[in-house]
Length: 288
Length: 193
Image (cartoon, helix red, strand yellow):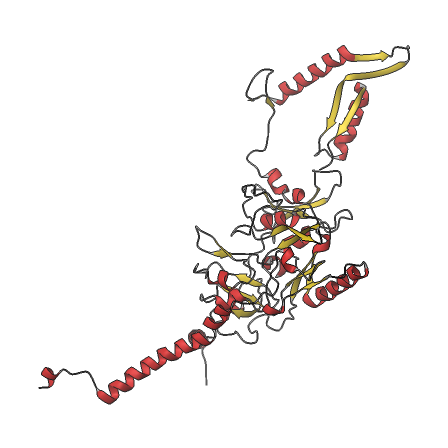
């Protein structure tokens, strides 16, 4: 049986230290590294994703771009964005793979009200469980990267699973395996962050001084890490500059939730004590 | 205290029910990741037919080759042991499943007569006979044994051979032989993307 230990479950208390069969096994946190400087936009990762997940191959409308589709869809979880930007009068054509970032502190999981619909495994994968999804779409509000998409017919939200099925048996994700230019790599998060740093150093030695790692701290870091040649302008790659869980979600799932619970409890207690103190309401003609 | 087997089982199951009721549900902790769709498939090693790079692929088919199973391709991915592609594949190679499992795939010869607007299925016999006849007629009409200055050339210039992108080494070897036998000079291959 493929079991993956759980770190967090939506709308449920923290599961605490792992228990049950397999609890003693060592788990690594896994990550994807996307070196955008070597992406050639071949879209092999897109096809690998569709093929592995048995998703339909869609024919979209032409929107004046080389992109397969303009955005992710419920049945298209991995998109190469062909970004165009201008810098000092030069055109930059920046290709970047775009999919779920598998945040260390996932906004989708925080926003989700359905127990068990979103699960974060100890290896860092944030997975959606369609069985428990109620289709409310709150995760779409909670995600600072605008990744989860609601399927209009099944009313389930779907996104990249980081191939949790493959990773749980020791395989790499389908997109990583496909990449012909070694732009994508997979391994433990520590190893890949070290690899990213080495790559950034190499790029700086080549004179690309704006190179850097995209591993945004606003969401606690991500399990999908980028090497950008223009790290000073991540928005040129279609990546938000300082992604964070929206304050509305944080407020509503934090203080407001407790305040709401207090109000509810206060109401019940107030009713109870009022009844004890004053008894049932009596009208004058009843008493008289 | 003596505990019979039945009593033990009863106590154990009621204990499990209690822990579940009080929030110690083991289910989410053992949340099963998606089932691996290739865990028990038959793996066949092959070569991607699309371009001249010849990446190695592993074709995963349904079933374990048992007699009563009709296998179908469920997944294709790169062969990590290949020194050529080391597991990687391009977008075309990754869609190989569609190459095999496809209701638009041609499985018999079709013939469109000159001037006709639609295709009609014909037998392999008929198709090969017609191709052989046309090749022979054309070759008879255009074969040059000697050139203008009387030198021996044995060439055929009114016909060309184009190899397909899905041809294997063996097919290309035979195609080369065939070309020399006919004397065809114009020879091209579409073995590229």
